[in-house]
Image (tube, rainbow, N blue to C red; front, side, top):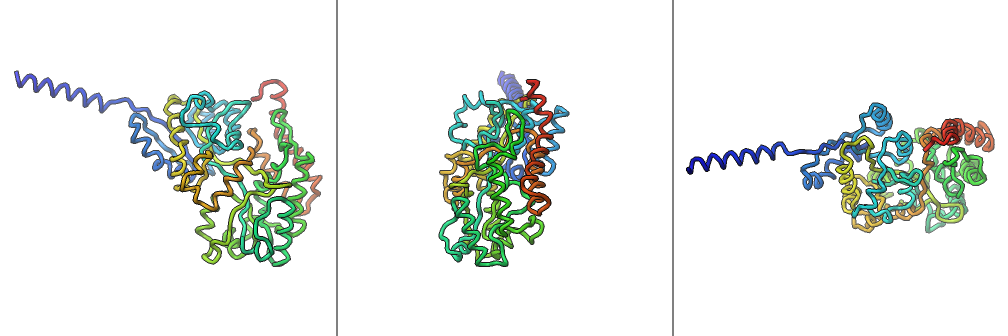
Length: 421
């Protein structure tokens, strides 16, 4: 009898172990890009430990090839469950009907609080009143400047509007005529877009798919931008025409530079010891006070074809918690999209990041249309031709507007037919 009971116990134990070994596991495919993809496994380790029933397979994509791979995956019905998307890519994938709307999940979430997100950043993933992604990290442009050079020119604080900014640049130029007050690379369209976002008139009428680059507001912004080169306050160069930004900023070749949060880490690492403590960040000046800037960065999106949207949403919620975002900032330097995260020690004590918090309250999304990246390239071409004197600003704006409207022709036709998003 004892032997029979032992055999029975062994059989039961074997069955239990067998069931555990074959327990159902949900496999999620997660595509992440660049540096974020490198740290994602480390960031997700606590989630995986708490949820052994979910296996997350991470594929790291380079920024250079990610966009093309995403479009190929959509065309071939081979999308992942979850993906990191550059904010300017969201409209294109929404137009392709590839993404799950997230509003219903947000409404029932105890973790993601819409009111805790910077408004301009949240707006980047909204199309026609629906949200299609959750902001993961934010990117915007503001001023990096040399405090010591400003002091030498007679100023104890950075500029807050265009008049002060131009006044300070003129004083710096008089101080060192062989240098330049501002480095504004001709091959970067982002500073130009940021200046254009200072006003109420949008760059593109999204509802009608019409370019507005000849509006009075954008003309005013471009007059200021082009005037900086005409007056010699910025050199007519690309970023390939100098040794590198960090070396030239460190030796004082220029005192102002418009850039994003990734350069906080680079300047800390690359500037000489003699300059550390002599540079700072400040919100971008506007026409009449602190100005707007670009709402960039990346968001987390769930693909419509995912077989496991509930589990994918669990991952999005986990990555959206403030303490996880704080850890994400420590690993990458990326800035969080939630105001509450900015109160946590790792970022609240970063003096260079605080100007970004101020700027994030005044960011605006770039036009939420699939054609935007092509149009942005035309902006760069416009700047080079006008600054180098190939044609006047008025002619350049007319050419830019015409080119953008050509790109938007198909979208206008769809809108007129009632078929566009």
